[in-house]
Amino acid sequence: MAKINYKICPRCNYITQDNVPGRYCSQCGEKLLKSCKQCRAPISNPFALHCPECGGHYHLVGELSPAEASAGPIGMAQALRAFAK
Ligand SMILES: [Zn+2]
Ligand SMILES: [Zn+2]
Image 1 (cartoon, helix red, strand yellow):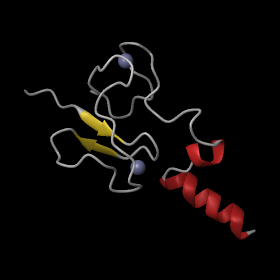
Image 2 (image 1 turned 120 degrees about the vertical axis):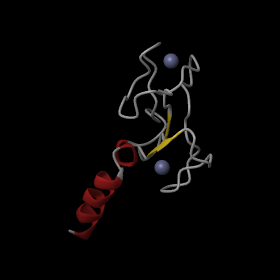
Image 3 (image 1 turned 30 degrees about the horizontal axis):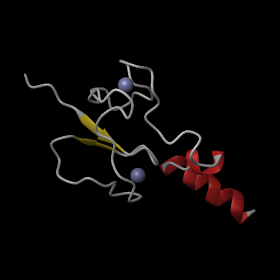
């Protein structure tokens, strides 16, 4: 059975299989991450937040404000509700 690797969006956590064409997130336009930024290990667990090989973080931690970092599909809805108050 072929091992499936994944591409994940470092901004909104969108997940797609590595064999699906496309280099950019279809949800937010960020470039998809297909391997660890630090050690280049492929992403075999789409729900991992950290690289199992080196512990590096997959997402844009520290590069986004906390509000942006939590603005995934659910975080975005919460943010919009907060603005509506
Ligand atoms: Zn995205
Ligand atoms: Zn790594």
